[in-house]
Image (tube, rainbow, N blue to C red; front, side, top):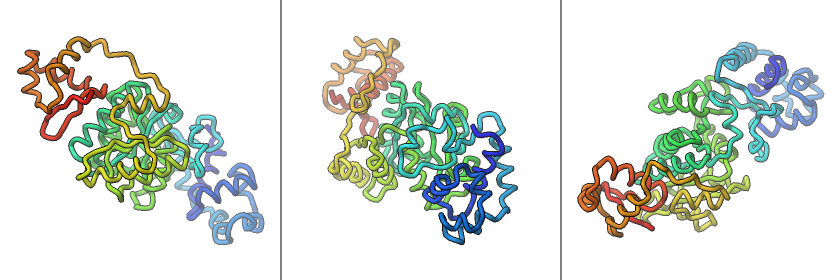
Length: 357
């Protein structure tokens, strides 16, 4: 991480109103480090940015905000990463508009881990929520960090599934890292900060604004090797993330659904445009060239195979499966979860399960 003097300059420059990422990088290209930008004259600055921005850069009214950010970064589990830091995630440097500054609460190293973005509708169906959790957990168990945006619905279940696996999860925020949004996800955000990482480019205290979230989405996809869309309407913000992923050269995956469901139409549109249709976590791993984890030794493969045989191929509920198999409810529940994570069965609305392979 940069020393405190350099870091203060990075923070101060990042707080200049109206200074976007492109102009920030143009200033760095011209003057070098932010401390040199802040020492430049009006005439020198005006050769790179409009006069109004040069005036904003020359103002020195951001001291209290800089001090607040520096004190925040000194706390355990907090970090501020700049484009010049070795710990800045290399995959983000590959995107057209990398954030100049990242506020991180949690494990900084996770930003450079192999990751997959999982996004989808805030108003997902029960099946969509189950799919998000099941895919995230299976992919996390395979060693991938799960990246999402902490929104309600699919994002939340993706984070929970990531936390349940070995790879954990990253939440990219459209607010300051100290702002809980949505408020009901505050406990989830705390858990992610303690076992994964929260990350944002927005300064401390930034409240949610509509324009922040598309910018957040490019970071979600930028941190990952690919983006999986679980459920999405045709006007869903999740499709923005998928487009960023495609533009950034990342893989795009989509889970198909009913032709009658509005929340399947976004995924179907992506598939028509070339996204990979996936039916199991293994499909994603194979496309990314990642070996799946060894079978869970706590699940007897003989029991799993026997349960599949008892199910047949028609939908059935857990009570019927218990009656057919003669196994205790705890064993059936655990085996059904494992079979679902392995992509061998699917859970359907109404508490039904169906064999798919």
